[in-house]
Structure formats: C-alpha cells, structure tokens
Length: 383
Image (cartoon, one colour):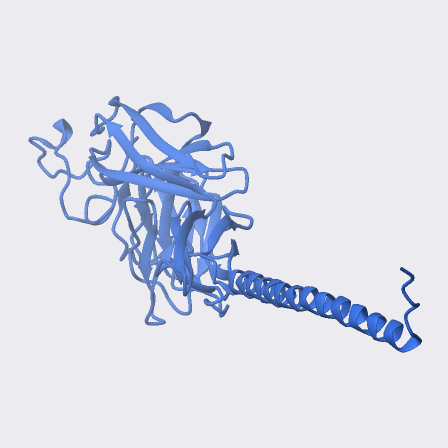
C-alpha cells in the first residue's frame, strides 16, 4: 500500500526534535565539564597557596664562616671579626672580651671592629649568636696580638759570688711564628746577645756587692720584646765600693782578711785642690774613687795614693761616687750633671743633665738603673 510522503511541516518538526535532543545531550556534557573545571581551578589555587606559605616560612639561621681579619695583630691595633650566616630576619649578638674594646662598630651587624690590648701575645675568644624567630646558632673565633711572651724563666743555681756558674733557661713563644732571639742581662748590663733559650754564665769579679737582677730578653723579627728576671744577692770583691757599702747603700759590707786586726795607722795622705766632702768608693782592685770641691773626681792607687786619673766636671763635687756592675763610676756634680766615667781612664761615658745641683750620691737598683736626687726637687731614674 502506498504511503503518502510526509508533509514539509512534519519534516520540520522532526528536525527540530532531533536538534533539541542533541542540544540537551550537549548541555549535559558541558555542565559536567564546567564542574570539573571548577574543581581543577580550586586545586590549583590550593597548591599555589601552599607554595606561598612554604616560601614565607622563617628558616632557622646557619653560620657558614666566622673569621678575624689579619689576626694576630700588633699590640694596641685593630682587628675586624666577620660572620657569614644564612636565614631570614637575622639578628647578631656578639660576646666581646673586656680587654678587647669595641671600636664604635654596631654590635648588631655581621661584623665588629675591636681594639686589642697593648699586651703582647694576648689571646681572646670572640663569639657571636645569630638568631631569628625560628631559632639561633652560635660560633666563635680566636684573636691574638703579635710579639713574644715568656712562660717561664729560671736561673739555677742562683749565683752569690765570683766564680759561681748558673744556667739561664727561658721558655718563650710567639703566636705569629716569628723567629726568636735571646739576650741576657746581669744587673742591667748586657751579659750575652743572640744566644739560645739556655745560657750558662760564670760570675766574674765584681767590685760592687748587693742585689742584682738577672734577666732574659726575648726579641722577635718585628723587634717586639719580652723580659723576665729574678734577683740574687752577690758578694762584691770590694769591701766598701761606695758610701753605704753596696749598690743599694744598705750600710752592710763583707769583712775582708785585710781589715781584721787593723790598727788605724795612717798609710798615706792625698791632698786634693779643695775640700773633700765626698765619701770614697773602692774598686775591685782597691782603686779609691773620690770627689772634691776642686771640681774633680780622682782615681787613686790604694798602695801609695798616686793619682791614676782625674776628671774635671767644672764645679764642686759633693756627691759620693758609686761603682756599677761593669766597674763604671757614677757621680753627681754641682753643675747639675750626673756622670758615668770609665774606671780605667776616667773618660766620660755619658752625662745626664738635671735642673739644678746634684749633691745627692747615686744609688743603683738591682736592674742597673741609677737613682739620684737633685736640688730641682726631683728624683731621677736613669738607665
């Protein structure tokens, strides 16, 4: 049976229905994708927030290095200590020793500049704490000054008279590793130079008894020195080498066989050119040294009083001579000078000018320093 063709209207409706169904299906798919897209965007946002939170979290500080520039330094010099640290919002807290003063730098920064003490071979520990809200960490560095230091000095056995032999031992070090040389002094007079850390000394004949300072002197390549010493009492060869009997004018002397049984008879007389207010000093060989108001210092033979030499100071001599460790004769003059004279020739070794007359008699310390008073109201210590 023949079915009639569809009318145009029916065909149009069919197309519309088919299109509507397709659109509905597409709409469902589109809605699903939108929901998934929303979920993806939210996940990405959460991830970004997490990464941002991680990057903003404060890190605990760490110290990679702490250093002291140019240490060891010269005594009294400056040294800069720096720290390298990693972390966020760091604060620095330095712990500085009292004798290493902060030279005005900001102690809250990554470096400080310090002024060292004037002591040689001084050592100190500088520490710093670096901190923030997450925690803290600390580190330290040692700083030092240049120059030698003597840890111990010994003289064994202590000498007491001519012929005694003693061993000088010096234990010294230098923080910068510079080579050390060793010198030794006896009562202020050089006994040996450029020796080693150990040196043997035999006491020679000394006119002057009394206290002597025995010293070891250590020197490095920068001419920085350190000194240590011990005192000993030496018997002099002369029974009365100065007014007062010894270097310190203690009034004590050592009796000699020649003095025993002496009758006080006159052996000789020496006539100077004016008053003699000065007291004689006697050398190790018996030579008599005395001053006079005729301005001269005389050296007289002990046997017959013959004049061995005379030194003219140009003004009165009221001061009494004294004999040093190397037999040098020290005496003052009314012209204000203190003189050091060669004991054999009378030649002037040096003269020290004070501000007025010197009637005072010099005294000698254990280290060889010459002490004397003057009418200028001062007491002088002369090396």
